[in-house]
Amino acid sequence: MTTSSLTFSPIPLPPSANPKYFSDFGRKVDGFDPSQMTPSQKDEIINNLYKHSVLLFKNTKITPEQQYELTHSFDPAADTYGHGNNKTGNTKSSILHPDLKTIPRQPQVQLIGNGRVPGEYEGLDSPQLRHPHHKTFHKSPVSQEDEDKGITRFYRWHIDAALYNLSPPKVTSLWAVKVPQGHTQICRYDDGTGDELPVPLGTTAFVSGKNMFDILSPELQSLAVRTKVRYAPHPYVWMSKAHALPTGLGIENEGLELDLEELPEWEESKIKTFPVCWKNPVTGSLHIQVHPCGAHQLLIDALPTGSSKENALYPDGAHITDLTKVREILYSLQRPGISPELVYPQDWEEGDLVLFHNRGLLHSVVGAFTEDQLRMFHQCNLAASDDPIGPNEQDIKQYA
Image (cartoon, rainbow, N blue to C red):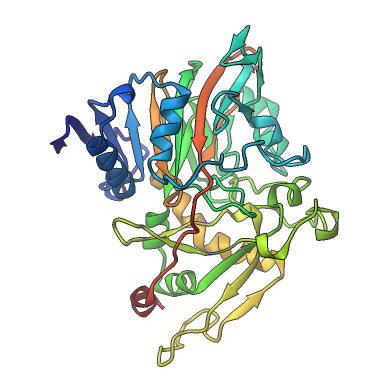
């Protein structure tokens, strides 16, 4: 399809991806020059992102100002970096703190990656970047012997969102400045299923929240449309001593979360409660959008009057505060959606610009670099001017 000089074509899929789940997911965009963006191109990019979840622009040159402008166009009333313009708040105990370096002249854009950048870069003096490694976060990391053979893990499946006070960004943009080349790695799930996935070195893995919902049984779809997640206050500090499951899809039940009294000062009114399913503003589809690591409680509505209770889960509704149970329910909703055939691992090349619908998919850092492998990306997302919208009456009628 071509209008306004932009061409959208299906994104190239790896052999591991099942094409039947990707007919609408991902588009490669040709003909875009960030320095010449027109209003009609902007509208077309916005519309296509909501339809296809991921847009890939090859061989792009984009300044921090242009990247901010493109990202900002999805939500003109938003202006603050997704975790606040001072990175992650004024606490260094947040698990996000070491991973972000703010570009001074455009504080909504972060420099992320791996290794020490030589000399001055975008107003930063030889910044030291750190690629998150699952060894620092998973309860049982792969052995050094396996890692030497190229075995790796999903680090943490997540949505880019503060999950406290600020609303989740609508879109994230990632621009690859420097990409180290290396052998394909094998991402192991290590959850007893035998699932594994060949991935390019340092891939970003994406899964569709729509697929995650669509493949569920009717009983689980009914539960999903009736459930809201209440997140912990300052969730990245709350979980800072906890460890993740080997799939990166949530936290182990070890009781290592901080007590709410130990957290930085927080207010009840700033705690975020979101639906499990978020409604796509263009397609109307439902996407399961839960950051499982920060989930604290579940609020489940009863079935609508007159609905059959046969095989229904929590037909009378529930307020679940037991963390183990909260995690068990969310895992049952989300784990099917990260099966190898449903994962799109982006094979990064320098100059790649990826826009992704942060309210329509989950993503994860994957892989490990050596200290001398320099990787540099510019990342931008903006805390949204509104909260996501959940299922409407018609959705409840259809699925509950």
